[in-house]
Image (cartoon, rainbow, N blue to C red):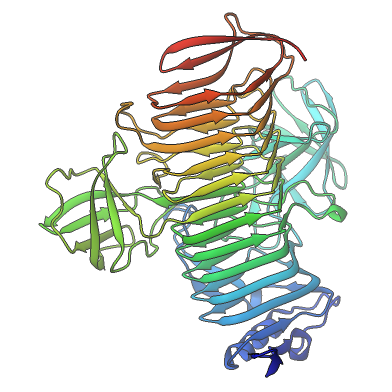
Length: 589
């Protein structure tokens, strides 16, 4: 024991990865050595540092752990019936451990979930970089376009083969042709989704190794220098998985490519991500760092902190924080509910525990009309669950309504982050507890910088926001060309009533916006909405709208306050509040 004043501090036991056979910078498989080091750490009591001396470590799938996990927002039974994950670093039932990377680079081969923390407590990952040898998002740069064809240079980390004039992408244990595609413009540092041109090409020929010509049965004009990115769309693995764990901290960790989905946090509590680098390594020349989301938080509680991090080059939303609505299918007894996971890609995971509180929600209005507490949980199938409540089911309950687990809802702090090269939104947040989004930069996202949704029809992502502050952020040309506002509050309720709001107590203040034709705020079914002390820079753009540019539109809202905002630009700026338009005449500064 080390004495510090009157306190005694335990000296952590240090376990070095190299003592178990790992050889940095050798290209040899470090999988077995890592497993032995983790087993040694698990056998010790007290604090542990699993130390990885600086270097590159390669992890191959042959000796990885294979274990089943149901992970939210990944793949349906039809897409991938086998929920087995191939796990490189598997921490199960461990506590008081620091994974110290010392700036090392972990490189993964094949399709792997890079790291899992399952039922862990007081764990930290720090000073570590993780990447793929062959990312499952392939890249190619357009060299020139001429008539019905264009030429591309394939990225050195991507591999392909031609079969009867068709182009197939290949990697370590995978092969595909069709799937989602994106286009990246390096000049504007923006990316957006497009049709898969590889699948549309009628013929592909190789001009020389890593140079291809794609032929079409129509004229096509591709700008030289643009980068095309393609993937197969199957979320069969994730970048990392944090399940039923608490007091978890990631600090100065680079996740330079993640396959399937990003860092998924599921039914865990008190999670902290600081100084994360979620972007491609500069030396690779790649433009993609994530197959889908970067950080996905589902059904968590405590405080979720995501601060001072980079989110660059994803194929979906960088941050998504939500719960899960399950549909009521039957009321088999006065105090029992049969509920079902509805979205094809979310099912099978433990979404309720004895003692949890639930809210009963009308599907059409998303209004909460009842509550309950859970006595027991019985699985009927991976999609259907019977919940026994401590009290009778409310009389007004209808088949087709939904329920939300309100015990597993977090406080959220998202601060000091940078978001760029994103084809979708920046932050999605739906939680009833206090949430703060502050001092972030949203740089030319293709859609809204912040989305507040809540639905019981599409993704079934819950729930109602009751205390959200969005302040001190920069929204730079978000939604440009897509007609989406910088901030979108859009619950998916089919029946709207201003007297029965879905969301409430949302404050948007002291932000700076740069916009062309797009609005800065659309809001629906929200009570007590403040939009104050914001600066809106209206940039010159083609096709000015007659009758003034709409910058704010509110629908079925109440108790709104719009005040002390500065509008910089030319012409009339229009606000539409519950169907009534008003105008502000601005002058160019």
